[in-house]
Image 1 (tube, one colour):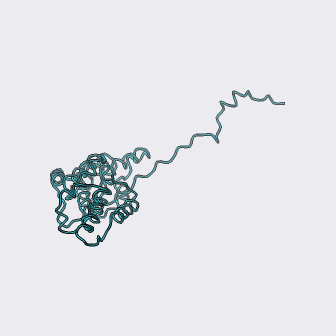
Image 2 (cartoon, one colour; image 1 turned 180 degrees about the vertical axis):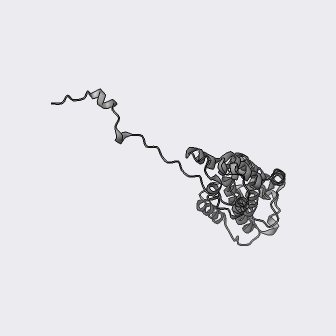
Image 3 (tube, helix red, strand yellow; image 1 turned 120 degrees about the vertical axis):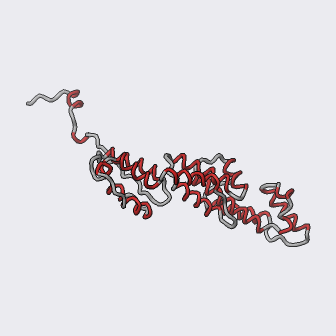
Length: 251
């Protein structure tokens, strides 16, 4: 009978079925219109290094992830040097310089500091303009881009309550700020439909908030001997429905 191996030796012996499995690196996300190119380039570089792709035709591979037609057209027409095609750092620098010339990027960032919501422009459309400007400003980090967008929305929005809501809730995420701004505008529109024209200028009533303001609206109509188009409960219900539809709570 052949001698049986020692238990400890068996435990230490390599077992092919227990060999560690190395996960294949995920591909970087596609670059869409309005995205941060610097962030996309950073993720693409990580992918190249993890997959050991240095030395291959990186320009063509990188362009395959660019889904923004305007960006793709601009980059694919570049006359790249041979070393720029195979070196990820040189390639990213060349692409970035082409998309964001220093003077143009500086001018765009300056425009973001002074951008204002136009008369008749919805806050949603205004936020889109902010995002479009920021995407062309060539920010190095997504945090810098987020902060610039937030500052532009806070300082440029027409409705004061948009600024108040964002600051009160200490919002740092721009998408969340856009949701709050849109919600605030919609609630303002509902409140204005339940308020008579000669009542809109009564600052003492508008200094009230929440339930007290709704009740003040209803009492005003009663005092004038007319039927209120919305009572306080109706306004509350309309507010609640908006908040539930968008899954967001505004204090």
